[in-house]
Every structure is written in C-alpha cells, then in structure tokens.
Amino acid sequence: MNPTRRTFLRAAGVSVALPWLEALAPRRALAAGEAPPRRMVLMNAPLGFHPPHFFPKEAGRDYALSPYLELIQDFRKDFTVMSGLSHPNVAEGHDSGYSYLTGAHHSGFMRGGFRNSISVDQLAAEHIGGKTRFATLALSTEGGSLSWTRSGVEVPSSLSPSNVFAQLFLEGRPDEVEAQMRRLRQGQSILDHVRGLSKSMEPGLGAGDREKLDEYFTSVRELEQRLTIAKEWAKKPKPKVDVPRPQDPPNVDIVARARTWFNLVHLAFQTDSTRLVTLLLNGGSHGSPPIPGAFRTIAYGTTRSASASASAART
Image (tube, rainbow, N blue to C red; front, side):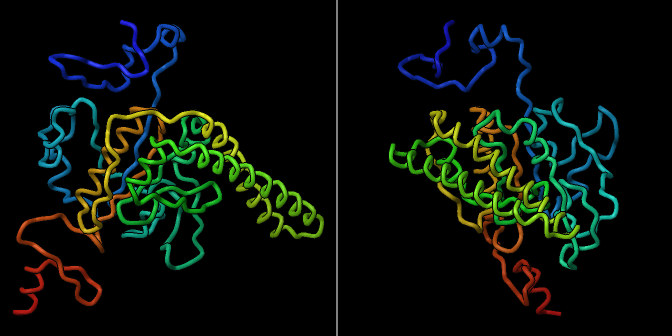
C-alpha cells in the first residue's frame, strides 16, 4: 500500500477517511526508528466525583469495576486508578486546584501572598512544545485554568471549542495570513525594544528590583521563543480533518461542553497539532446536566436543586 496524505477506505460507493495510522507511515519514517509521540491530557473536576462510585473497593489487578469505571471497561488494560494522593502544605477545598499541577505550597489563594510555580504541562512544553503547532492547549468548560508559567502567571484558557477548531484546522485568507505574520514581526520588534530599555536600568537597581527584572526577562525570553516558533508554523498549511466545525454548546449544558472538548482533543492528537492539553471541567455556577424534570435555583448565592429548595421551605 502506498499511503497518501489522506488514505481512504472505499466500498459500495462509500468513502471513509482514515485517521493517521503508524502502519501507513512512509517507509523512510519507519526506518528512522523514532519512538511514537508521547502525549498527555491533564484534567481536573473541581467539584469532584462521588468516591464510592469511582474508586474500586479492592486493590490489585483483579478489582471489581466501580459504577463509573464500568463505562470505560473496554479500556481496562489501559488505565490505572490511584487513590490517596495529595500535595503537602496545600490548602484544602477549592483553593487546592491552584496547586493541582504545580504542587506550590499555600494556605489559601484568596488570603494573598501566594505565588504559584510552573505547572507540569508547561514544564513538558519547554522540552517538546516546538514539535507541534501548539505547544499546549489550555481548555476550560466555564473559566479558570490549570496552566501556570515558570514565573507563576496563570495561562488563560480557551472557552470556545469553535474558535479552537478554527485555530487548529481552518486556513485564513492570504491577507489574513499576512496580517498574522505582520503582527508576529511587530511583536518581536517591540519585545527587543523593551528589553533594551530595561537593560539600561539595571545599574541603579537594588537586589529586590533586580530579582523582579530577572523574572521579567525570563518572561520576555519565553515569549520571544514562542513568537519565533509561531512564525515558522504560520508558514505551514494546517492539517485537514473530515469533521465540521463544532458549535459552542450553551453554558448550562456542562455535559455537552465537556463532550465537545473531548472530541476536539482527540482530533488535535490525531493530527499531532499538540501533545499537551489541560482541561478544567468546571461544573458549578452556570451549568448542570440536562436532566428531564429537574431544574436549578439560585438562593443567597448558593446553587441548590429544586427538590432541596422545596424541602428547606417545608422545614
């Protein structure tokens, strides 16, 4: 078989496009002996799961599947369930999410004085990020992010699957591509100018200010590297997928939003557009599963089910 850029199965007048398969790789690629890419998806559900329905009751290889794990029983040999893990010296509750991928110590994010460290996805991106169009994808169903830079700055997450799909797979018009290249060139020149001005300030700075300026230079260097990589990828055509651009599900339907993100992450990995993804699965203030006959009410800033509200009213 001589595989082309897109290989198809054809039968009875039906043509189905295949994803990239190692068996269809060109001979020269196989001869190179390169190991298959290693990928990582990091997810966090801040509201958690019902533990008895998630964790198996027995340890070891032959445990009985819990109700949640029964849904993915076909992949039993491909996953490992771990319990009892925690970060030391990290506040409990919702604030613990800020250190989920960093392990940074803190007694509560909202109390002030907390400075985060680099998240594991960004650390991995420093080593393999340039191999794909996007070093990492930071995604979220409602807001917030799991990713933090080396200087402790939160990486904004994307909330629109439709927009991310366009960034991954849709080509812009020639004038739009040129405009993007122009913006990248301008960004590079602005960074060079600002860095030059900042360097001239160093002789008159104290130790504390020098430390802050060093952090600033680190951020500038990181941004310069990303700009350089982005300019190279902007010259290359995007991969083609036989999937329509998704519509953004409404905020209230958290199940549909999560499913749309899962499908898009799958496409990003299939096309090797990225190898690192973080996904924050919020499920609180704005959304709920679309369960027939159930609705949500907001009372004094707390979200409660209709049945719970009715019970509270009777008492």
